[in-house]
Image (cartoon, rainbow, N blue to C red; front, side, top):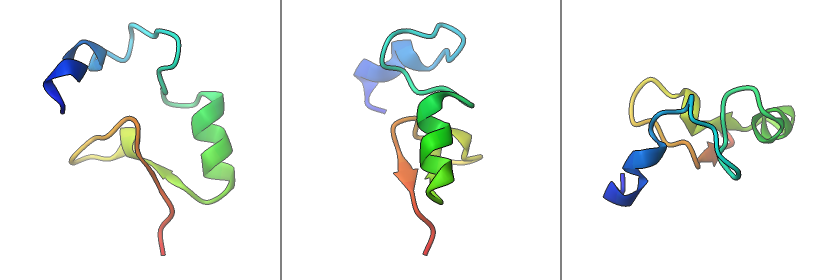
Length: 53
């Protein structure tokens, strides 16, 4: 989702601005207690970070 994002589903083809597992963005958010949507088993959302309550 959305359809225009289909070309970004292959996370092996890393391009500038993409968030991928273990990168600086994911590590920085995790250090503050956030979960990354790219690691979710259902409803994967690579641009989403969420802090559990």
